[in-house]
Image: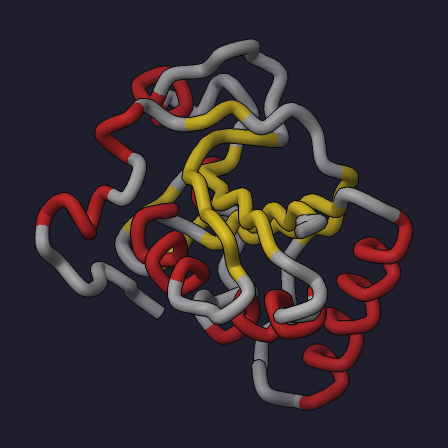
Amino acid sequence: MSTLKATFACGCFWGVEVVFRSITGVVDAQVGYTGGHTPHPTYKQVCTGTTGHAEAVQVEYDPKKVSYEKLLEVFWANHDPTTLNRQGPDTGEQYRSEIFTHSPEQEKAAKASLKKLADSGKFKAPIVTRITPASTFWPAEEYHQRYLEKKGLATCHVK
């Protein structure tokens, strides 16, 4: 099986990790940090807002079973892309809305999906989601991986 990667930042990574894991065709989802300038960042460092990283989920998926476009639909449906550096009660640059693309095809699809959503009129405020090339993804500490599953929780998701 040949898999691909997709990386999304849409606020706190615990809730969206669960959502992506539930999709048929997603082989794995890992939480971590990306888009910043500090190598090997820790959660404590990312929370200071000085590393430039976003809390993100890196999804490994089988493109024969789920399309990148479907993953984009899940991304848009599971956060508010109109709030700059904020999701629900969580504030700070690490909670920004961003799509990290791994190929020119992903970039094209991400831009098209953003335009389609913006043109739909679903949101009164402008969409602030960034689309940038993927950079190094630093897996979060082990206690963050499958956090809700470990705690016996179904969700902590806040829209």
